Length: 289
Image (tube, rainbow, N blue to C red):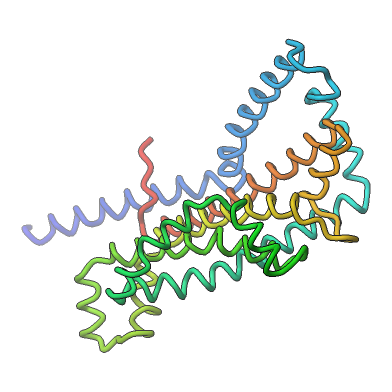
């Protein structure tokens, strides 16, 4: 009888776990997506209402600050033009290539600084200082070094994103439980193998946060670069912002800003999906209610 009681308790707990899993599965992908989308739709509605209210208040003439319906109509018209999609493709190519290079640089720097005390003392504060520098401050130097071309833009994107990625990895390594490191040494893991199989997986939450912040810095640096560095025969979102301002075309300017905002939101959703997958894999996705 004493043995049956724990077994019965284990069966009941297993049944509750199975019930919880079935409830989660019944929610389905559509319910999960709707749960993420409807708060965004409410926020969009509030922003549009405030936007229209500011326009109706008449603080600025409509040719200076177009209303939401005018801007959305302009955006709808531009969706049918090849130049618009070419501009998006150019901007995304620059952003993704610069971000990929930033990840490479950030991981190398973060891995070295996090494990070598001399490098931490020498460059730890410098990395944080580089992270806080406005990206626009690097462009005069970038233009002097590389000229008005994509290399100047990539240079500033990497300088904007790599420090955040490196700091994310450094923080993750710092908070790796010492017991895991001792276990890795017992298993014979050393240097690269220790990083690959133990430290990097343990630092993934902080590293993912660094990647998200790095993308935000990279995206802002890219927009600033495309406004300043205009390259012939290469339309981009930043270039369209520049010419819309020059022509005082507020509808086109705001339509382009909406596109930039939408891309930022979509990337944030992707990072959110990655974060949720990581939490579920680690058993940290425990929601109450």
